[in-house]
Length: 257
Image (cartoon, rainbow, N blue to C red; front, top):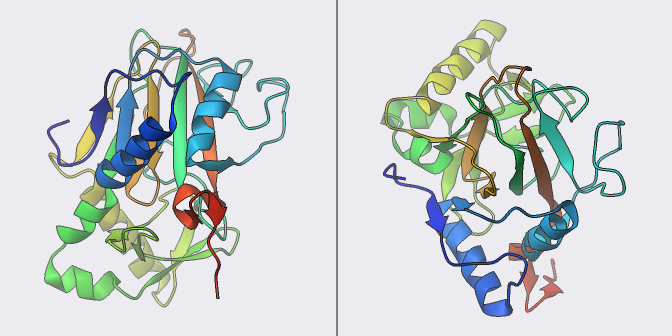
């Protein structure tokens, strides 16, 4: 990944992960923002277990095309019978519509496409650093408003590292507070292009057995299309913002004054 973020993790078996490896994975995620672990092929219950090393998991309703008995899995697919389709084809961080934003997303390949279906990732902290000084001044105190009314700072400080990064869901953000409608749309379009600037994205082509971990407050992602004549399935788990690993000390909840 010669783009300044992200790392491949080698020689690890997520079915048999000890305390030392857990600590290393957590540290690596904070350092790189995106981790790719090859050749895992985790079953749904194994994925849930591996995901829990980063915190408690969010749950989702079973709409009939999900994994029965495993509400922690949100399945996305190329065909409606296999999972949710047409999901996230714009720059976003999962769970930004929540008051306490979803901090971590994890995916496991179930069926890979022959062609297409890649996922793009971009570094939100680098995106902020590479803004002009004038643009930094423009965005630093702005607030985004989601369609459901949830507010988030456009420049978000990472709760663990304290580093600033842009935080903007291109599909679910209704407007930016304090800007006229045209100004809000213009700024969002400009930042959308900035996320996709040359050399800023890592394009992940899903392979059999891939397990990918993303810090949603450090990186955004964007799905690409895959034809319905191909069977492509990803199982996705997400960590709750109220119970992510960096809010714990020695396995216990932090005390918040």
